[in-house]
Length: 96
Image (cartoon, rainbow, N blue to C red; front, side, top):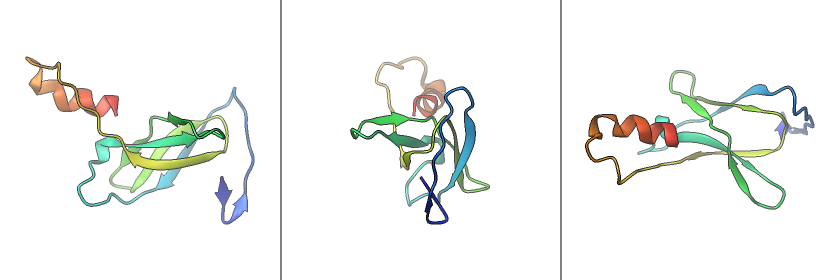
């Protein structure tokens, strides 16, 4: 992770910090589906459960280390919610 162009290093598995990244939604994106992914050294991705705030235009997540992260819309849908249509968008937003 870089801060003002300088490489930053920090890791403490016992003390997560709250981190926010500025992000402007692209056309057609749903803020409820925006999250942050950690990119591992081997290229694996881990969803950090980021939460987008449309008022501040920031995505916030908790981490125990500075690393490589990126913001992405993660659309999730379920075909087995028949009878629960009233709750479908809430379930899918939580899963994203």
